[in-house]
Image 1: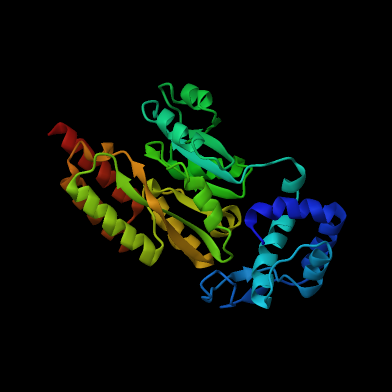
Image 2: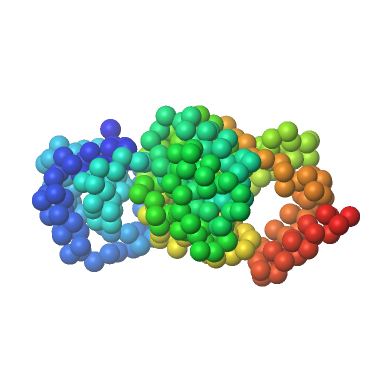
Length: 333
């Protein structure tokens, strides 16, 4: 059975010479458009793959001569073979560098000493192999020390902006799957395995989790249900839903734009152009501390209003300024 987990072993079985031969054959072919090709994504639904490298019959024959089976149908062989060829062409050294990580958990931080240790503990509770990267924006507390003590690799960002920090983490990661996690959000013990299993499906480029808030009020429970419906229908996720993506899809989408607000929705809207987005359960749990200052009702109304303005074309910089002013007014009151 073909799985994404088995790609490194496949590269090793082919060997560097055969892998190079396959790569040269593909590179001699001009990239073409695959519009609406059936790609065996489990549901038999047709996907738009965009501009992709064609996995030719000759290359598949090389692979299969080494005992690698990509599927019984033409659609399966094209979809599965493409993912394998993309790996050996774009990241040819991964299988020969001893890298064993499947998922990079990227956490942007700024003064998160209070909640970060629990976040890292929840990640370590997962059995799936992963690398933890804490990208710090210049914390003045013990965030960096606690991150290192928790087994994370700390990366120091020159700027304090979540989008910049997440892009930097993706650049430094050694894995083929990214999970972008807030420092106040906790995943379940099987979350990473869920992501790996989900991304075994060709045509699926990423997604996120359903979300719940710690000690949530009835209002927040309702908003979480509505948010899950939005994610399932549109493929849009907020940052505290644990957005995940294939490295290749992340790079094709251009990563996160350097926006002070709604960089998450903006990224998901672009990522969804390259394939299917999915919503996983059980929900991950996020801190409700953001709602403490103004209360859950007032903060939720403000969030909805800001989101509507953003979707109607308002400048995220102006929206971020308005949000900060609203928070300061609440504190003053």
